Length: 587
Image (cartoon, rainbow, N blue to C red):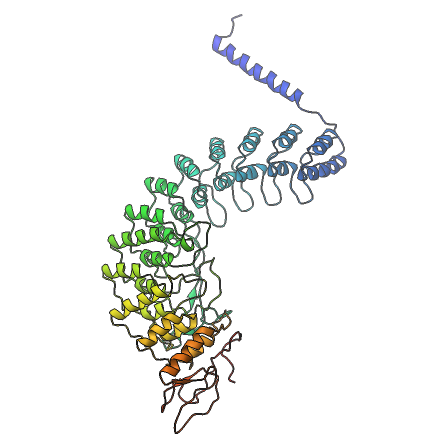
């Protein structure tokens, strides 16, 4: 009888050794008494609740008595998930030793591996994978452990899951978000690096959702009402942003992950692929105050004139970001690094950004801004970067734009000029950052230098004086009057500057009186021979004097009719502190 060949003999010996080891391990595994199913389940429920309460001693005791290790707690969560949730490796190992199924999910389809991946628990993830956890199991929304690891940021867990066979491009059922997108979204560049090494798709896009309809003006609480457009141009309202179309690069640009942006671009990600509203990576970075990423993308040749559906181009958006109240945890001025944004503005202009590109539609409201002012007061359509800079008194940017051939005389589509914007028309409380009245006056002077009229009116017949009175800007108001501003001019609701100083209800803000502005206007009226009587009716001196009636804060020149046209009802004046719906009642 011949002996087996040497290699075959070695293989047989190795197999036998493995079997012996496995048997030895099995013999070492804790043994619990086998109980009737009902009794084991009852003990298992108590055991799961003990795991929920982090009572390891009770968990051990009940397992030793024969508790079912897979019996979930009252809310459907198995004990292994509770141990993972509490980052309790000892209890998790104990449960596994007593036969817990590590792939048992809760009622949302989440397994212990999902939780460990999401929490970045490297040790627990390794324990679970060694115990047979499946790396690609989706929860009820289609999210896999790899997706949660990408969100949680553990590169080690990502490596473990990929080595265990997790699908690198798995996505959820609803939005089609991939692990690579999540890595950029939550700014985890090391995860991005590993996913790219695993050949993740770099230009995958999230699911495109339905395009919202335009909301008619005046719909809902009125914060986007007809307001300023009553003068003629038919408003189509406002359209919310359409969902979907996001890429990993767009997520990284939005999340401020410059390192991931670099890696994605180097790997071939398109810098011109926009989301559902045509927001491309450069614009996405600027809209989210990510100026380092914007600078990088400009250097890579991004189109500096690519605007989104609303007409927001990178240049206008950078001017807006430099001059918006933007809360964050940074220490920058009004939480924006204004010098950094200025560098981006100049870089955009150097690369050929159109200084006269205009907004087309009302942009989506920033989700952090207070809905504290009527956007019917703000005319976005047709705004240029120069007008937006004027609104905040950003003379530095205004002059820079003129240097690059900006037209300083382009008004909005409804006739609001840059001078009117600098005076206060379009200003919104707690949303519009400005450099103070002195700089706003400098902005007005610059606009006057290019021929803008201090008495120009927009389609609602609102003038610069009305804007200054509304915001209580006394220095600006005095400057305008000193340069020919007419205090008696009324808007198309019959409201003079004094009416605006007494307070005008702007859809979502109550009327707020500006006492110092009221006093100033009355003083200026007296100095110019105008008779104004606070919130009383307009009065005309001499023959044909008009008796009182409407609450107007009106003004008239001696011997002539006022801007309200005699005793015409005004129906738009609000007393200090008064709130109302729609138009004011006549008094």
